[in-house]
Length: 315
Ligand code: PGA
Image 1 (cartoon, rainbow, N blue to C red):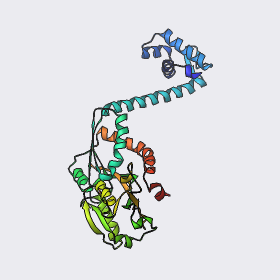
Image 2 (cartoon, rainbow, N blue to C red):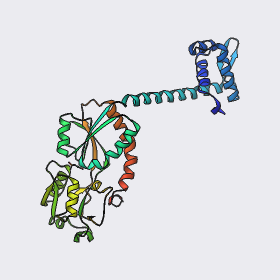
Image 3 (cartoon, protein in one colour):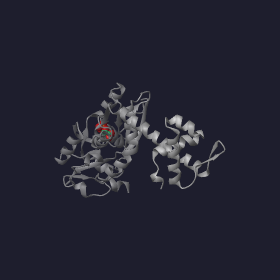
Image 4 (cartoon, helix red, strand yellow):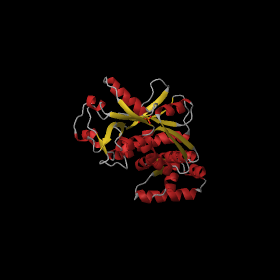
């Protein structure tokens, strides 16, 4: 029944109930008094109980009138919140969002951006993908709005916030003898020739630290400047490598590449959103952060399931 009430009737009622006067409500809403009376009469018919009582010259709210007034306030408050949201959305429509992310984030961030751009069409996004050292340099030079890192620095005054897991796994060619073994020791692993990323890479840093903390040094066969190049070189039999599990999405072929079952692996890590502490974030950047907070968990969970080796290491 209340579904038949119109917003206009509720608005008129709210005004009469607040002013306790038909005349003042009519003035406030630029309506004639008979129009106000008709709207209240129609609303009363819909509710099926009197909302207002007139005793002498004074108007009183009945119990149902008081309850309806509360509901009206909630509805109008909700609408005004929505209005604010829309004007914020309109406000960010024309903005520009500059992101700089480390190499592993390029597998996930573009998906998020796809949804973000759908929600805020017209936002101009630039995405710089590079290694940790260069991302940190860009942050020091204040070149972008928001940064994604895998290993946040300890010595910079920045806000950081973890948002999705980014574990490191050991990859070998599918036909490698270790591919069939279980719980391979780190000692044994360190005998293998390794393919590693360029200096400045966060993955390289994390890998070297991990082995150094265990008193081991890797035999580096070759240094390559990208995760994809390393994957191809592993498939080509040049060595084994520690890479982010995220590099295995989409095109993973388990015959060509095996994730080795190594003691203490995967190395658990996260991606972090970061920006300088004193940075004034733009409306667009704030909208993006807000979007990430609400969406990245939802999209992320589904996405992580698609990564080989991921569900098993979480169980
Ligand atoms: P990198 O960082 O591109 O600097 O190696 C990737 C990561 O830390 O996941």
